[in-house]
Length: 423
Image 1 (cartoon, helix red, strand yellow):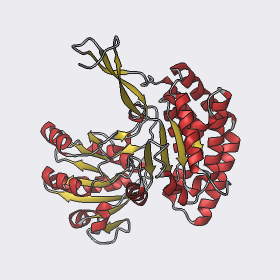
Image 2 (image 1 turned 60 degrees about the vertical axis):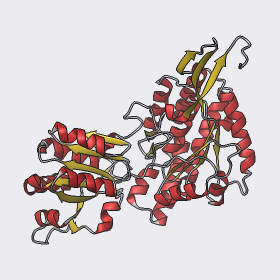
Image 3 (image 1 turned 30 degrees about the vertical axis):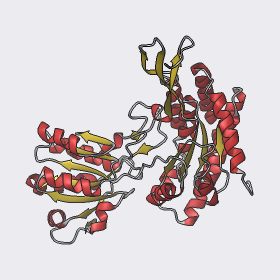
Image 4 (image 1 turned 60 degrees about the horizontal axis):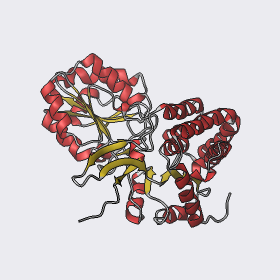
């Protein structure tokens, strides 16, 4: 481990690398991405050994199951490599002309998509983020400075070594992927003030990390990834089909930000639907935190150990586990009010056959992703056809939802004249 890091030097190297990346052709960038995917496979043994070291330390420290799942690369490395190849297959946004015109004086003017420059990403127990971010950044001509959590230090060292080696083998600057090789939190604070070299900060972690970045950064910050996600089951919903959507949203991977946290059920169908829902989700090991009306249906005798009375704070909890909040509501209005009060603007949906209710839900729910008759689990860069994602932004500027290639770009105005001067 590096005893002391000179972040300004690291920043200067990233800025110099970004200038080189900005000149690359699409073919050069794609060749490097394929080289990275190949290298991940070639060095799989070393990467998995490093990941095993992190997992062993995490278990010894008492890390919970949700974070252990995020930390593990077991069975996922081939998928990560495939995602890199998917990014290579995507259209290159750099150089795209967004708009163009000819001014009355004859000067040609166009708005062209360009790289942001240098992106700093701060994240916790998800080493796959290292590769996702690096591949998206490379495709868009950006350099990155990565700061993973202490629990991923060995995994990230191995992955960054592979990434840098692949870049160098392609004749590209290894400094395009920089790594803060220390778990010391002082470097997070230093990175947030490296505005001379870094153009954007993306924190991926809990609310505490997001707030720290917002309060301490001199660089624009895009936050997201905290998802208190809702599904509202309308009275008109296809109940059998709804059960499978809810099961998928809750159990397919409960430790991630787009997993379902709170289920709202219309009172007209609650007596019939809730027992069916509970029976289906119990097959996946789900337990329940129920409001008084849901509790009277799901645990009328008080003898169901997997159904507990909800407390108010439960509606503001991102469970990241097989726990589901359940509430009965009388109307769409009540469902919308609950979501407005408790959603983190990540992913929320309605299950309904009523087109008017669906339209109103879409218009009024102010989340990055809003679904009609679909699982919240689709909020993902790969699922959206973006190849991968740097983060899921719950902000409204500059990107929103899964941040793929275009969200890692800005634009510049280019004027072409014939020695024009302003009158």
